[in-house]
Length: 188
Image 1 (tube, one colour):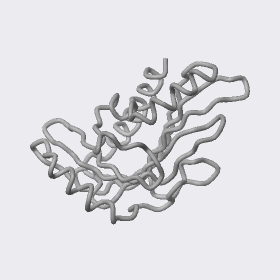
Image 2: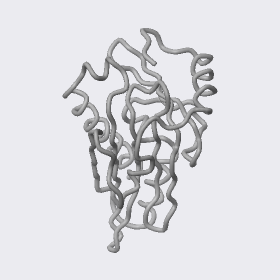
Image 3: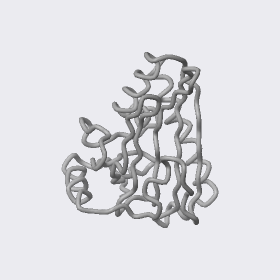
Image 4: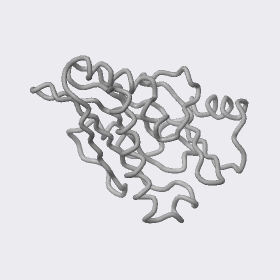
């Protein structure tokens, strides 16, 4: 989960293999799709960004989602890099937090491909520093305006994250903003 050195490709592959047999570690799987209540005991954040208007902008934003542009913009690597966000797919995130490297396994818990709404959410698996779900959605309204919506709920799952306390909420909101900015930038 945390390391002072960048995890090797072998470590990432072993983490991915182990994670494929795991189940999500949180309550409310799929709650970020909307229309339902988020589970209690989790901190939540929703960030929206205007992207533009029209079908080409919508298509570009969905392509940005599918190529992990949001994660790259936030400094998160996705392993395996060729993975696509399809329901049931398991990936490992790799990110640097100051002097520490963190690996975090996630599973795509749903995928949406509708005429005016597309995206996916992944949920945390065993060993992830937090428990929860993040959704990455591109939505187009009746006027053709395209927006990206990042919805997340989580709670600490590691003592280092618990130690962060209120800083964790700030990091969550800031990261969600970076995800949204990454999609918006890639779609323009």
